[in-house]
Length: 85
Image (tube, rainbow, N blue to C red; front, side, top):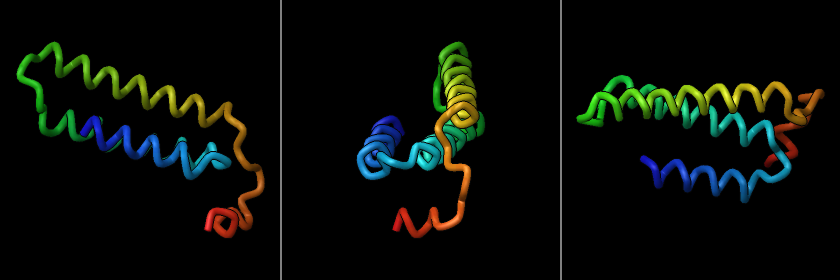
C-alpha cells in the first residue's frame, strides 16, 4: 500500500505539473481509500499503532482539504478536460 501511494504521487507530480487541483483531488481520494482500508480491515496488531496510522491519515486528509481551499485553483472549469487530454 505504501509503495503504491508513492508511485501514484510520483506519477501525478510528474505528469500533472500544471494541474494542482487535480493532483490534490487524486491524492485526497487515495488518502480516503487508505483511511477507509485502515478503519475497516485493521491491519496492525498493536492498537496504538492502528490508532496512530488512522490519525495520520485523518491529518493528511485535513491537510489536502486545506491546500485545496487556499491553493491556486482554476476559477473557470470550461475546457479543463480538453487541456488535460
